Length: 216
Image 1 (cartoon, one colour):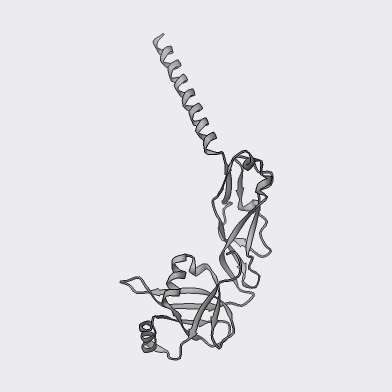
Image 2 (cartoon, helix red, strand yellow):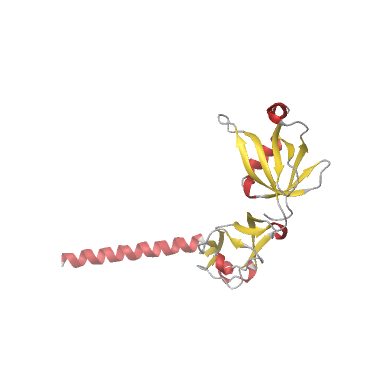
């Protein structure tokens, strides 16, 4: 999640119950509820098209949102559930949880690669492969990092960057326990093709030698 916390726009819903929810859907809205934070739940409506776009972008449930409702203070929320129509699989209701600054949540954080000009492997024509351009971290809601930084200085072809090689922001920890790969520097395709040809040639020589030996 790079940059500022994205806004999620909604409007307060005056009515409650199934009737009001059905009316909201007829009006092109998705009804929802905002709860938590030691204050009363707030019924809301979110524009259907805007919500669909957010859902299609992916990771809606693991993104921290800045909820903006007219007449209400902005509040940080995270989605706890999206109810869908069992036939059409379209959103019919959404539950949002208010977060305290001390709350811990799991979010995908953007990975930023620096010092590419100081990586010998890239200078030789190697290719940087970002296996995980985002990493899911468990963080404190009041201190969410915009990104984590991977320093490529000194890395050569064949080098691999694991999560243990990265200095994480204070209070943040990976949600995956194993030491997973974030990126690697691989040989350029021309070099890989040359190596493959050499291996093939070596195999052919070895095969011929074995064949001649068997004939003897």
